[in-house]
Amino acid sequence: MADYPRTAVEFHDWFATEAACRDYLVRLRWPEGVGCPDCGGSEIWFMKAPFYRCSQCGYDFTVTAGTLFADTHKPLRLWFEAIWDVTNQKLGASALGVQRVLGLGSYRTAWNWLHKLRRAMVRPGRDRLAGIVEVDETFIGGPQPGKRGRGAAGKTLVLIAAQVQSHKIGRIRLARIANASAANLERVVRQAIEPQTCIQTDGWVGYSGMTALGYKHEVIRPTAELGENLLPRVNRVASLLKRWLLGTHQGAVGPNHLDYYLDEFTFRFNRRTSRSRGLLFYRLMQQAVALQPILGKALVGGRPLK
Ligand SMILES: [Zn+2]
Image (cartoon, rainbow, N blue to C red; front, top):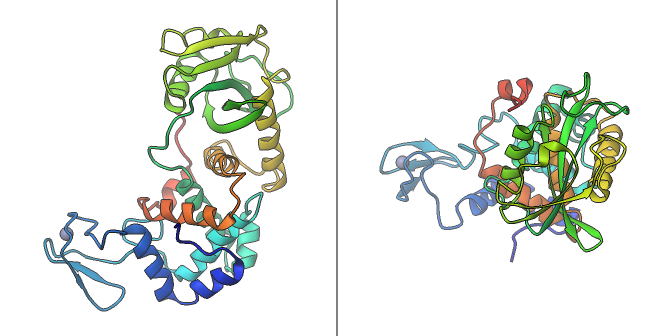
């Protein structure tokens, strides 16, 4: 049985104190018993709460050491509220919304929290798409199509991979790419899609090496024009993504930070049929305690484009 609150009332009952929040993190992080984050030792002394000491290496730590919550100066209860808020809104939360709901003094803090949470939304080692997958690219940040090989000024090219599930869309992967060169497309496809998968594309020359990479390749649209004429599932994902960026975030997403938003969109899209929002909260919590701490500096700079 997954261990998460089902309703807002349960949520507030469960997490009424700092100690209750910490206990929950302990259960998620160390289901087999507390372990030393430094040496992996399992002989742990329980010090004055919230501290533990490793009997092997002498390291003093708390349950938040080495997680997304490390070095936070705010109560865990606020973090839990933020995560509940983010996972319970169908379209996600904006920094301004989180700042208001939590009564945070600074917009910057809310913005930083949301970006940390977006990082936690990408599960390390998540499995790749398989079966039949549509792959195509779209421009974010401008309506007019540009030439694919060159990349267009002021716009960001995003590769969309969408699993075919009868007439529906299965899971998706998104990736920002500098341009639609074969090298970029192949790198992202290899990261996102299992070998042997049947990849459906248009006739763009950048996809011509897919068979050599070990994929089955079907060109289901002969044209190589970009922008207006996307493959059907990719097209639906692209328009939902653009609407979401414009709606929840008012289009205020710079290219350097777009990756985090792509991660959040993917997290939500791939779990859109989850019956319980509490389950989303639980997944994000699990990933948050499995994450290395993220420094503010790394957030502000965005992620380098490979
Ligand atoms: Zn140790």
